[in-house]
Length: 147
Image 1 (cartoon, rainbow, N blue to C red):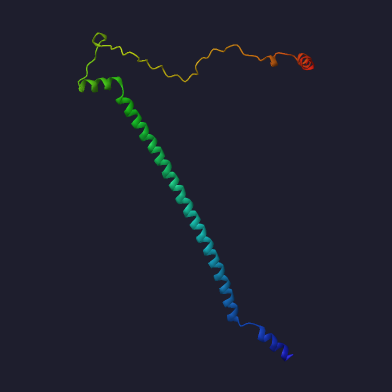
Image 2 (image 1 turned 45 degrees about the vertical axis):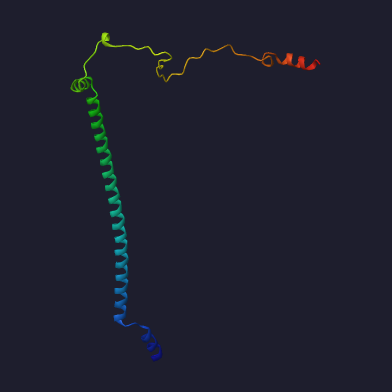
């Protein structure tokens, strides 16, 4: 009996070893939890940064559209009849009437035709039907039978 109790006593661990094992298990679990949390924070941070970059890019695109609209309205206002007349007067141009024009005839010059996206009208000639397409099946057999 003493040998059996000695055998169990040798395999029973000391209390400080059990405490160290529990501390090791706790610290291992805590390390795993910290690593998972670090990955989560890393992914969340990158996602937030990507979202912010997208928002900034959209704001930049919107600002560019506004700038383009402003430039288009500026061009349109500068090309108005009133502004063009004022600039022409500043440059020394003056309006002329039809009696002040001199027309010159240039032999061989042909005036450019107006540009049109519509297709040009083409007169349809009568369709040309070959004789092969005007005979019936019976005529065809009859013609094939003759030498």
